[in-house]
Image 1: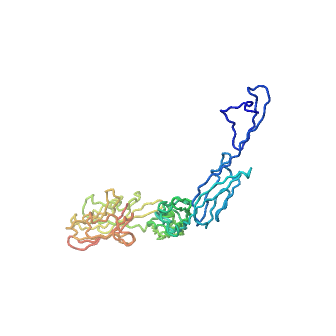
Image 2 (image 1 turned 60 degrees about the vertical axis):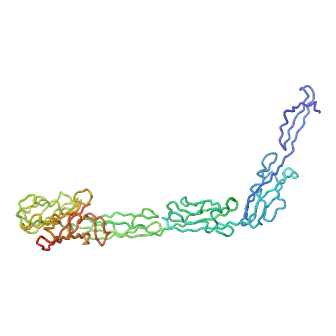
Image 3 (image 1 turned 120 degrees about the vertical axis):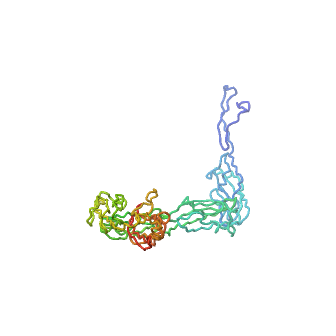
Length: 507
C-alpha cells in the first residue's frame, strides 16, 4: 500500500485522541474496482504532571500543604482521577506524608521552605510515569486562640469583652492588625463579633441561658495559619420583677380582687400569685399578699389592702347654716350636693329629727329650730342597700355679716376640665373676716395628706394632691374618696374657732 494507492486529504487529519485507536479502510483511487485494505491508527497515551505551589503551614499545629496535587495534572488531556494513577512521594522529609492526593504536614515538622517531588504512574501501564514538584513553607509562627467565658445580666447590651485578650501569636497577645477574625458559628444572632477589633457585642435581648460563638483567628494574609476557639456567654437573671403599685380596694357588700401583673427585664410580663382569697363578702379589713416570680425564680412581694364596708361605715357629710331667719330660697340646701360623685340618685331622703323643712332632697333652714339635723339617704348599689348620712347644723348667728360666713363646698373634681377643680371654702380669703386660718386634710384612715396656713382658694389650696403624707409619695394624685377636714381660724373678733367635716374628692 503506497501513497498513490490510498485516498486521503492533506487538509483533514485523522480524528484521534491520545491513548485511543481507530480502524480505517484504504480504498482504490477514484473508488474504482479493486481491494479494500483495513488498517488501524493508535495515538500514544499522554500523561502530564505539573508543578504545584502549596500553602504555608504552622509547625505548631500542622495542616494540609496542598489539597489534591492531581488538580492540574492530566491523562490524555483530561484531569486525572485518583483511581487512574499511582501516586508516590520521592524521598519525603520527616513529617511530610501523602493522604490520597493530599500533602499533609504533621505538627512539629521542622520549619523551612520545602520542595517535594511526587510521581504519578498510569495504572494501565505502570512504566508510564511523570514527576512534578510541590513547593510549600513550614513556619514556626505559632497562633493560639483561647476559649472565652463571660457572664452577663439578661438586660445587658453593648460590649462584653474582647476575644484577643487571651489569644497569642508566638507567645504574645494578638493585636487586631496581625490577624484576620471571622465567625465559624453562633447560637444567637444577637451575639456579634467585630472582625476588626475582636470585641464581642450584645445587640438585642437575651433570655437566661448559655450561648456559644465559635470563631477563627488567622495570621493576616495567610488563612492556613489559624486556630479556632469558643466564646461561652452565660446569661443570668438575678433581678426580681418590679414591685407594682397596688391601690387599696374599698367597697361595700362584696369585693373581688383582680390578679395584678408587673414587668421583668428578662421574663417580660409576670402575673401575681397569692394563696389569699380574691373574693370578700364579710365587712372588715384584709390584706392580700402578692408574690411575683420570674422565670429564674427571682421574686418580689407586694401587699394589697382590702376594706369591705357595710352601710354603717359610710362617712357623713356635714353642712352649716349661720342664720335661720332669712326667708331666702337661695339659701336652701340641696342635700344631694353632699352625696359622693356617682351615687345613685334614685334613693330617698329621711330625717331622724322631726322637721317640716325637708322637701325631697331640699332642706330649708328658714325658721328651723337651732341644732343639728341628721338626714339619711337610702339607695341601692346593685343588690346592696346603702345609707349616706348628712348632718346640717342650724344656728341663729344672724348678726354675722354674710361676707364673713365660712361656707365649705363638700365635693370637688380635680380632673383638669376647668370646673370645680379645688376644695373651695367660701370667704376664707377675706382677711377682715378671717385674719388667720389653717386647713388640714386627712384620709379615711387618719393619715394627714395636706396642711397649709392662710388658705386662699387660689394658690394656697388643696387640689387633691398629697403634700406631706407619711405613707405614700409626696406630690401624688390622691384617689377618689371621702376625706376629713379641720379648719382652724380666727374670726373678725380674733376668737379662735375650729370647723370640721368631710369633703368628697372624685377624679
